[in-house]
View 1 (cartoon, rainbow, N blue to C red):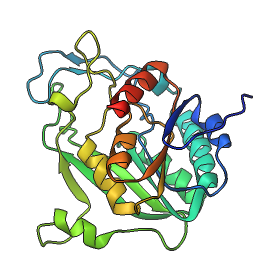
View 2: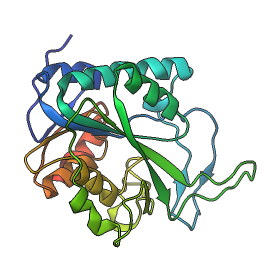
View 3: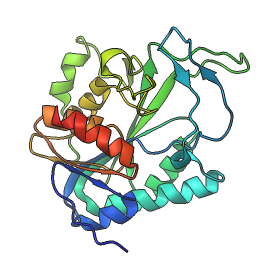
Length: 255
């Protein structure tokens, strides 16, 4: 096995379960990440002329294909267990997911005795159209927020500005990442299929960490977590197995 030495505010390329062994135990304050959803390889449906959120292509990435939910469950259990090792006792995890794999994520966390604080619902203001008309339109994704033990950070007063003097609720509205924010490749398609809105990621970090805290993203993808952490004066570690995404993220962060 390769021996990894992770550096603060840098991305390390490799398998996150192996790379995280290069971090000291209890060295990060927040694990915030957008892991594979296990939705690739199921069907093909492209909407190149979609007008609601720009061109849309069905997820079909090798890194997102699992044999069945059992294999995905074991994968989730392995990376969450290693992330738990490097998380401080007062830290928390924020894991993006969809209805496809939220059960596996919750089971892995509960097996480690995590307290589920909230399941934040990301309500998309511009969801993809329901072409098949065989189910309700899928217009939400989720962020499971779970605490390792007592003393987790929740910046309640800082979050009040987003509530318009109302309750701080667990349903947040954001558009799908599009326009100038969406990173494109040479062909004009999205460079990363699941790029999350910067505003969503920024709010998650602002809510659950203090300035100077360390954020770990084991699946950093296009680098959104790093960009948000830099803006909020947080430190970060990033891990990504795909070399193309690493190049994209490093270029984006350098700007």
